[in-house]
Image (cartoon, rainbow, N blue to C red; front, side):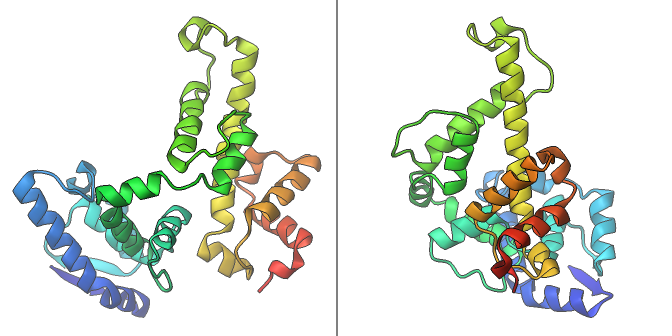
Length: 260
């Protein structure tokens, strides 16, 4: 495999990560050849790369000069330029793994390896429900046991999402005998709003977003207050998804100390 880097940034990122990337690719390839599957990536990983992936990687300064890469390998390379997601950050912190300076692809890999272990997966699933999950259960008016764990909370929210997320009302006898059109419409609005809430919360806490606006990590409490204030001023969550600047401006207004 041979790469050409057209920028100093792309050269630095590739040089910093090529050793573990090579080990990852060799492990996945060997496991796939031996077992016909991989324990850490899905079947999509072995598909042909898309033209968009090739274009995006070229734009970021990395060109594959020799060798053929899978779709998943292109995804790994593109992830060198992104920060760690909130979900991966939570997993790594739970298992006391360092995060500083880590890129999205390395975090994805480490999390996949950690959770491929059955005992680790059991520990992760049985941890207490997160504050965000509890907020989601309250937002969606879902009743639950006091000591609910993460997997149970995830199942409740997922079930609600599967039943009410579709855009068109399904005949009541298909959904459930007790669910009428009015209830369905209300819950459909709730789950769409909750999806937007989660998306905005993750976006404002993305490292690149926080660096751009020079803010520290936004706590759930401050975020909830900011969203509540924005809604009281006539904004809706669907529109706020495309106006992150307005959300961050309100966060700073409510909590000025969040500025770095």
